[in-house]
Image (tube, rainbow, N blue to C red; front, side, top):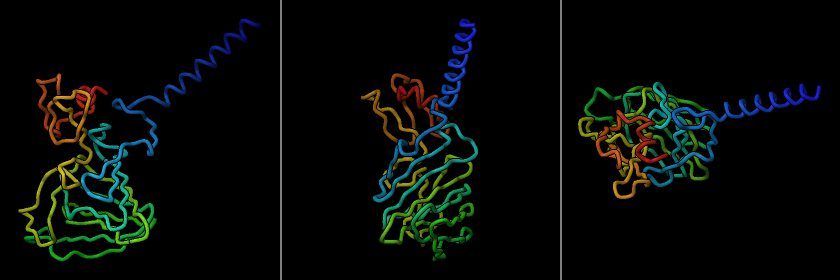
Length: 227
């Protein structure tokens, strides 16, 4: 009887251990369950912005959607931009203004429409419509959850609403510094274990790999940056 009790106890411990291990299992090298507070943030050169890629294509292997959590301090805003993917916003807190131009068939975006957004509101951006989200509330942050289709996004940015579509800059970025949203860091050639964000990959000691970021995979990322 004592032996049976010991066996049952060991089976229970084994089952518990397997359950805990399953809850921590990884997807493409990343934990299945993660704490958003512990995820890396960046502002991509835009003061007042906090961007977190909750789940993405290049970092996590998603193929159909990508999810961002963005927080805008009072006065902070996105650039005027457009992209060929669908985009849905959910306002978690705060308020602000959405500027949207549907003149994709004109020479330039032109004067945009203005829409007030507020906590618990949602809105979507039609494909290739130039838009800008601005925290026009000077008293509190604006926080939004963003879902885009067909990642990674290829973003065309404008200096102003009268800039011709043909002059818009395609740089795969959200900021003004060349730092790419959803694009994993690249390894520094001189410091093998130091990663920095870029739009191309050229890894040391993997000198034979020169991968454009569209072909970049989480496995390449881990090899490059020794994760």
